[in-house]
Image 1 (spheres, rainbow, N blue to C red):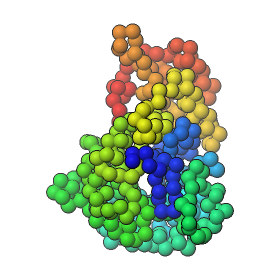
Image 2: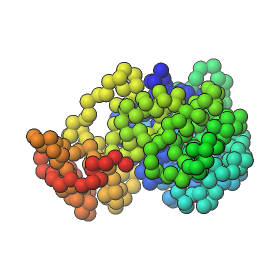
Image 3: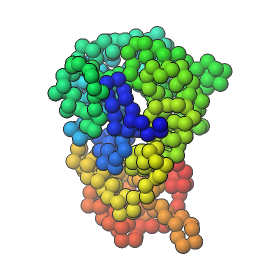
Length: 382
């Protein structure tokens, strides 16, 4: 079944669709608007430094920020020291995590140069030691029924378990470090996934690229399928990469046998992609795209949430960065079928120095203004 709700350890999600921990983008405000659109089974924080969490770093605490509506929530930690990672996992549980995830897939230099992220794919013994330490720590801080009730959201615990119940541990990985190794049949991910299951991991997410590929090229679905075959149903495998529309998720499940799909960049321009995809997986139908007024309302809602969770300066900075993503779904066609871009809207928002100017630009767009121009970024999905 394409639309079977996903079970991760003791946790049964409402759907099998997850929001990826998108570095620099997956803040509380964005997770909130994705949840409000429906269809989202689990959202995850930005990747978190355990050292930063334990020191009380303002940046780390901000990235880990959540609230009672933001449930169920995964908190993803990264690093290379097993003891510090275990302490970071305990911090996550004590601060509301529904799932703790270990990052073994980030290809960014500032993470891999510290032996974290996908660098762990080159040191599998270290990766397993980290998981063993974290799994033991999660057992030590298992949750009571009352503690669980505050972090489930629309998820549920599978029946029959006795409390206390530990928060499940998951890992997110890539296929391997080297693209040559992958094509030569030497990808480490199938063996690693089996070892992670042995060490207490409840699910793995596989981004179907190598570290060397970063975000270039096309996702290698066969590589995800190899991991699914390797774990042989012991734990669910969640596929990730290049899911930009509902049909991509269905194709990933059919071709790989994965149990769930994690969506990252595809959600940045289309926060309602989870609702559309869940509908398509259930009955093959995609709901009508939101009308322009609703899309503008979502942008406005996101901007106001950022003002509420942070301040006007932060909200203006973020809407400046993200307006191009949101604007992709505002492009219309004229009577001849040619696209009518939204460059004037983007420029008006980027030049805004006051919140009222952002709202004024959105209002003008709704009245039929701020259209015209068409740039390459609008016509190509990332």
